[in-house]
Amino acid sequence: MGDWTTWLEQYGYGLIGLAVFLEILALPLPGDMMLSYTGLFVYEGKMNWILSILSAGAGAAASVSLSYWIGYRLGKPFLIKYGHRIHLGEKQMARITLWFEKYGDKLLFIAYFIPGVKHFTGYFCGITRMPFRRYALYAYTGAIFWVSLFISLGKVLGPKWEAYHSTVNQYMIIFGIASALLTLVIYLYRKHKRQILASLMDLLIKGVRQFNSLGKVKFLVFASFVVFVMLISLMLGLIQDFLAHEFNQFDEVASYVVLSIFGPGWHGLMNGFTQLGSIYLYGPLLILTAVWIALHARQKLLELSFLLWVVIGGEVLDEGLRMLFHRPGPVEAGTRLFNTFPSEETLTTMIVCGFSAFLLLRHYSKKLIRIFVTVSVLLVCLLVGISRIYFHVQYPSDVVAGYVFGGVWVSLNVILLEVLRKLQTSEAAPA
Image (cartoon, rainbow, N blue to C red):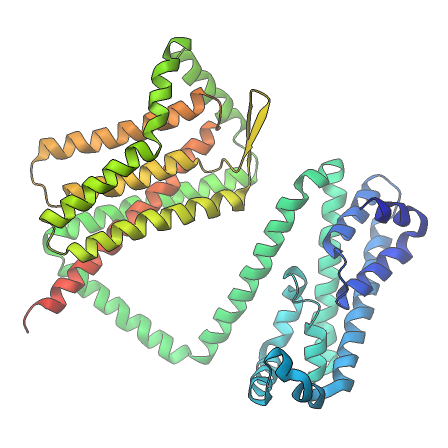
């Protein structure tokens, strides 16, 4: 972006307006980044904040207007003639036209945050003959909001903008996709409102009946649900604290306590505890659980399927969460780890050990054995987390987040397994 900053210093407001104009017309220009660099110039006092927003907004408004009128002039005959090349025939075009007439204006506002979408909405709105006044209301408003947001982010973050740009961009993409999904849900709800409400009422009635028919496992399902709700609350609190950067004091105090209790003499043992959060424990434990299910469980296929689903789904959840939060970890021996929130080791240990223990003890009646296994699982999870803090490869907040996210996944799947187990038993019972 070196050339961009040089040109921006020379040509200022005219350049940012032209760049946004060309970018929305579908030219391969990094619009979000250019706007943020403009905000950085505002922070440095080289440009005026209001004038920057007005010039970028004018460029965006001119671009979306031009794209609309291009689409309007080309019209449906053009798309019908050449649409087959991008798998758009007359039937698909009719559906798109109907959808754009009803809900296209809502998409216009959020399209600026969805990569690739903002470049084509204007053309489609013109082709589908959306009234220009209606189009302009949403397109111009969305354009002003988009340019204002990214220029303001550059202005507020200042020199730190480059360090946080990828994270901000990531959240903007998530915001755009989430907004699009919300629009789709609203559309489906309005279209099928009566059927959805009827289905929800029917599901609620069935759910109450099924819960009352759970018998002995009713308490287990209820307890799992309570744990699930409590962990969800903790999870939301952790996410809020993460976004507000409020972990510093907790991490400092927790690290100090761990290193005070476990001095240099614990180094060898801590290496052993680290291995508890690895395949050396996971592998034998999963094999043991699978063999136990095959020998003792009545619904073998259901439990084996759930074991596989929980482990694979937990791994996907772990990777997705760490990529989403993208937190730089502590610096150890001159090396910094990334994507440490939540801790991969504590989350995976919680999932594998917790769910395996549940399946092993589900049909085991001796209380002392149950207590021993439960305490052992909690101790293993605790030692894995302490070893991560001891070797300074993850923050204490990373470790805690791994426990919480892993606990949410385990408790949710315990509830699902027990409900499906009961449904399967009910279906198999003679009428």
